[in-house]
Image (cartoon, rainbow, N blue to C red; front, side, top):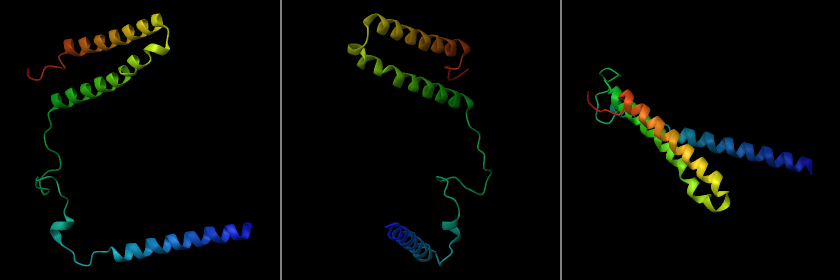
Length: 118
């Protein structure tokens, strides 16, 4: 029984390797095209500098959006557990979580991270 299992495993491995070898041999490109080998960069010329100027303010707004988006996904299940928990602990937890979110929002606001233009 063990010999039969080992034979099946080795046969499976040989067949998989043979299929991968045949696929890699058949998928090789024989025609080399300079344009197709160059990277496609959404209309930008890949021959120029690799780094383009990027707005740091936009990056900060995007990071803040992601942080608050994750916090909203943490906030959504609070409504669904209302019937399964103690009402007092539910209210305390919900209010505490919302206060933490509001404090973070006010901190970002007073630091000036939410202002798009200066």
